Image 1 (cartoon, helix red, strand yellow):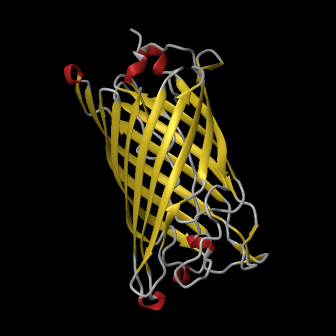
Image 2: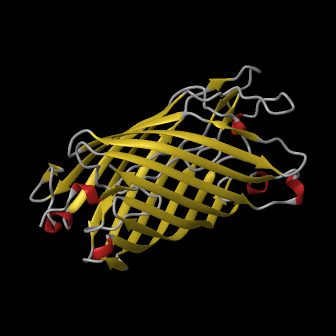
Image 3: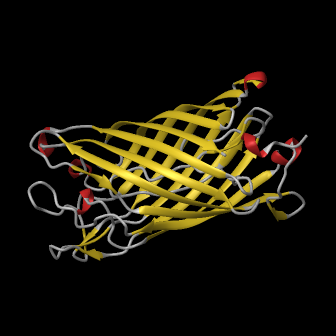
Length: 324
């Protein structure tokens, strides 16, 4: 039995925090493997198909007396388009809108940030590694699947965005000033006819940039290792509807930022996040919702990192996508 391409739905993980961000890609359908909420999966878009994508990542931060005025929340919205160039290669472009809001007395930042572009090459293992063919049967979807994705951001946002007091804060700017580069690999496998494992490892690197006020900044390197289990929970074939519970564990390692060539205190460290959630498929659309919380942290000078990764109360992740 062949899977109709119109049932394929893209599920992407996109830039998620403040000045840091990474993009990954993946795809799943009403039949076959489940997919993560945010981590990347291994399958690619069907050849000739276009994906429209929207995502919101809302981060609410813990507040402390020593940090007043605190960062209150950051909200990262994303619009994206994907295209299946071939059965094994997909191309993507994303435009983000970032909001970074402080408590009363602080400085807020809002605006369109750097555009991201990504490519993904899909493989499968069946008596050897092969590029993903045009059509796969349900049996084929039970094979090990892999992908390599690559790309980065373009300096389309305003890196020298000034806050209401006239200053430039690199952590609240609307761009990195120079391109960033990312590279990742994924692995996905249907463990049973209902349970799917997805694994992602990826890296993001930044360049040093000199702002208009002469300060120099190079943000710390990001390395990620994510795992996800998706369970095919409830399917109504006649309604073309499916609902999957999903659990993800995400490991994030952040290098120190460098300010004017010197490693900055109160930056970098390690975080493990847990995110339970659900993904719903309906006809040619998909919707995902998850709540993400840090469950383990080892931050450098943790008491100086209010508003950073690992200092969230929680993050709410929502996405919607449509294939046509």
